[in-house]
Image (cartoon, rainbow, N blue to C red; front, side, top):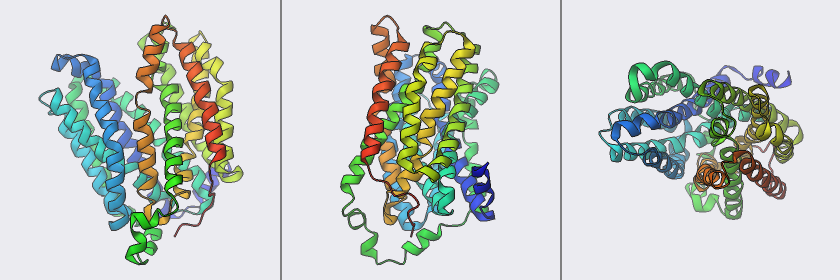
Length: 405
């Protein structure tokens, strides 16, 4: 396939950079999802309600924009590579410390700090990888990087299933410290971005945020709106789906696990496919096609009744949803000025994620208030978000194959 040939054309250093950035986001997501799997066990241990433990997830999301800004600015000043290593070491350390939380308050504080570190990884890793490769390979690499999140979720589920009964929730968070080993790989194999090195030669005043963003503030607000819709798109199609399978379709835990695993496979495949496609037809057009096709997947995704049909519907829906998402890293990086490329994409992404964080809660309440009709709730929500997302994407700018540096 053509996108495989684009990856094969990368040189040795470029492949190491892409792999390190992919693993960084994968392991970051792995650490994030471990908490979502362990909510019930933590609630029982601390003798609190599950909804109280979910406050820790909210604090994690709230801290991510702060981390995106601070670590992004540090990466602009000191380089992508050292700050990426610092970021990975910090989120791994906070993950490990979570295992020793004496109470819920301490756990919430530690998850806030984890979210702070997590917020920086996506923007720095994406800028490092995309600045290091030829423009024609950006699309497929973008899709690969973004779907590290889905792979991280799969790994978290696998580790939970294999080890939870033996080591408990505290042991899971100890395993979550293993991503720190990635620092060794980055230190040994990954070079610094040549684009960043070139940008450092510019006069200091040109590297300041206010100077770099002159004329781009409207675009930044547009990107926050775009990422809010994108995050509503993913939260709305993923987060309450397991509850829908169990409550409305009556699937047991094993069947739900099979369907959600197949769903994650669709996400990875879609992200890589549409990411690569965007290098040929354009970023906005690629996003629009994936989102429009998601409208056609609503019926098999929400209204199927058998396990096989639900799995197929979930695969197809996430192929389209995450297909659109696979274009996001390259689209945001190409729309960002050189001097703030490590900061701006991550900041607008994490801000949009925080704004949309209540989506699963609101959808769940809406469905419960309408006789637990999750299918209808999800279908209406995704249809509305998809239409808005297509319109906002079409009305926005594009900078496909922009020269970096």
